[in-house]
Image (cartoon, rainbow, N blue to C red; front, side, top):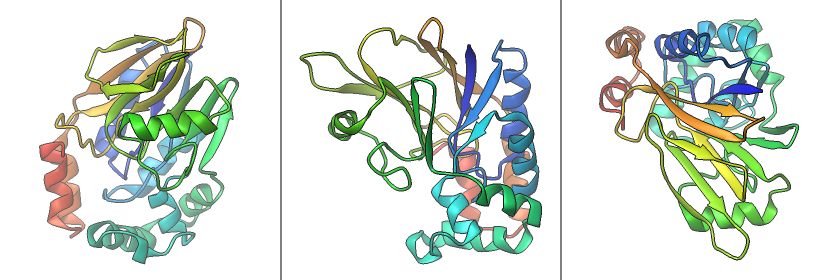
Length: 243
């Protein structure tokens, strides 16, 4: 099975639509979303509707939980809290119901799915090999997918060796047939690895191969929507800078 793995869409309709258009020609038969469908961006309802329609499974991220009221806004940075509060004010009831139905972790066959990490599905950022090592120690599956950091990454641990990892760029391929793996597709809606293009992952669960993808989209349009909604200017600038 070929799966398109998406994460951290953050209300960016322009990015999500562009990614889904590319997914449609990729050979992927399923779409999985690792959470944070909303937050930061100006189009929460279209993003929820697209994910609800296209994704075979979806997790809840910390920003989704903020919008549903399951996490206090005091736990977030000022810009994130302002965006979550704005989203609470404008989001449709049916979108809120969808977000409220999601869980922060799960599994799809032999693959573990987490918004944050296997140790803390809500908050932990897996950004270095030491944290990956600790996650491998509690992971019950050989391969797991994580989001949350907005950085495309892979970590691997083979028998007798410590975990290693690195950032992933567009077109990178990995053979997952051996070892334990943590894979992060990067962020669809707000990349933070210096490449402003929308990030996602194409996973082949039969051949055990992964390919990191980047999709160009209308960044100016997404930034203009943020400014039109009078959300913090920094949120528009992050899209333009990819940081």
